[in-house]
Image (cartoon, rainbow, N blue to C red; front, side, top):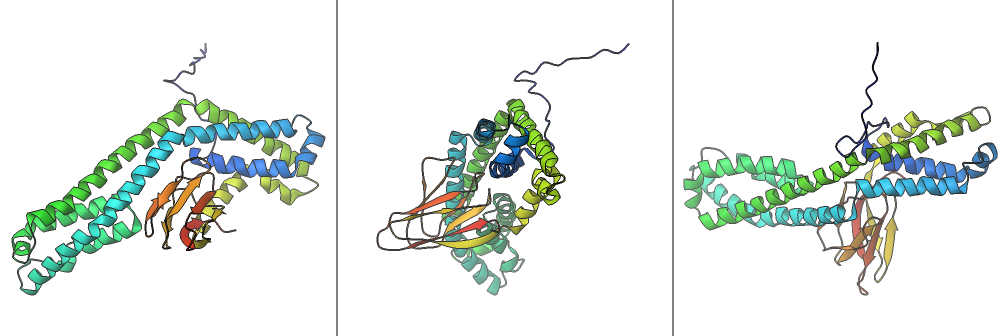
Amino acid sequence: MLYLLIIPTTPENPGIRKFSCRIEELPTLSKFLINSLEHDQADFSADYPEMNADYLAEFRKKRDLIMSLLHPKKITADLKRITKRILKNMRGMRTHLRKLEVSARLADKKGELTMSYKDMGIGQVREAISKADVEEFDGAMGLLKQNISEQYAALTNHGYSNAKRDALYKLWDLVNDDNAKQNLLTDERDSLAEANINTFNELWDIMIDVCVAGKSIYAFSSPAHTDEYTMESLKNRVRNEDRKARFRRFNVPKGGSISILRVADQSKAENTGTTILAVHDSLSDEPIALQPGEQLILNNPSGTLVVVNRSTATDGEIKVKVFAQ
């Protein structure tokens, strides 16, 4: 005799994922299908009357809901602020690294170091800062700290001091503290998504229905068009486009604004001009000020970035990674 065990869906047991893709790919995949359905609305309505304008509106509404779960406004805003602070503190270490390098170089010339000053790890820390890679930065700082301790007596012979060392380490501690806060917020966001997994499943059901209908409509009349309704083709499109993302510079006219489309999520934006810019996307009503030379990691699944230049005297410039047009 077989017994069927029915497990109820609760906050502690949110359900099983139906979708066969990464959860962060759902916004982009669903956007592809929404665009195709909108374009082919007449064909769909002719064969499947229920897939009309109201159906399309409900599809959009469901996508907006999962976007709010994947990127809650408050958590997203907090993550952006923390990321900006992390990058500021990492860049702030460059002055302290320069002071350390001078002392290390002088000690090396006197033969007082047990290694070349170039092997102490200063270069690795600088590279991690340039890449805005917090994990690589933390590992490089661990190595540098060990070498500073081992070579400290020689370094103090050439102007290095507790105050200089502690100033360097203080910024490192601030970065680590913020990174821990970032991880907690990310876990909170992920838990929110998992607790609402059935909402993602509902969106997936709509996506599959649209795919099935689209392939049936165009199977004989336009076989090539069925790729737009084939989930594997759409997933390949998402993953291939990631590799095509490239950095481009955009001019922001004085006193004006621009909208940059197809921006890569989790990529880096850099203010490469000489004026302060305000940046925001469709998930954040509050623009974030970006100083000249500053960088910001974008939490931007919508793919659109609005950049405002309030200066009436000088054009601005921003460098952003975007997908191939």
